[in-house]
Image (cartoon, rainbow, N blue to C red; front, side, top):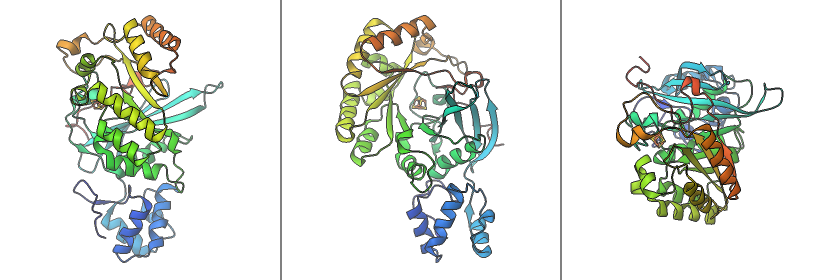
Length: 369
Ligand code: SF4
């Protein structure tokens, strides 16, 4: 069959990651009946079959053709680690031997303590990342390439096999900056939120950006109905720029302007992610500035504990990054609430398996070999 124009890596054509209309076009262009594409689409996303051989509605000849010409699995599971708190971390090998991680996080336990009300999958969008946030382990891995929508969607399909409960939420918050792989992320989102697949509700999909302004504007202009979160981490331009080099390119006033534009266009609230660093962004002045910023439009603030990273030899500013004490963390959350801000405290789920926020990293050299 003809290779779709959008494939962004060389290698075998992927069967996963094509929204239905596109898959239909591919089939018709290849001389197949349009409804066969729908049968394949349903087989992958509704019946969750990995192999075309299991798609009983397809004639044998078509199964063989698809099996020969397509890569039906986009990611291959290498390892699964399980945390004491139920969080699972997956290492997936890609077709070219590279690898990415995803994290499945049960949250909001109901009183019996066994049945999570929410099951969130944190998916990766790039192999490595070139934004260089100083608190993030992924930043130590140079950007190798963007993931395809097939590789993004398949993280979900494979991870789902490890839970009897359906995944309810997706956050684009794993390895990589999703706005720098916008098209593939949105193609995957189209499949995730398709009424036909019913994988997750649009309001339960969140794209989290380090502050890539053009992506925010594009989401606003396209009227995307998924949620937006922004890693803020500081309300002072110089401090933010030290933590996140992208802030030198898209400075705070530009970022805030873009977020207000996003709100005006979509009427959707924005979530600010804020990691607390001892003595760097956890003072009363920080509370006041953050409160003022958060009240400018409907927002919520997620406060996140910092997890020290020991994979590198930090120097200079990086070395001064320490977690706020638990007491300071609690005081900050309470003070921010007193400023009339909606505050959520994010737990350190998966800390014991290096699956918590900012901890995703591993040696690409060893992956998949
Ligand atoms: S925090 Fe996100 S954007 Fe920043 S380096 Fe890590 S993966 Fe990249």
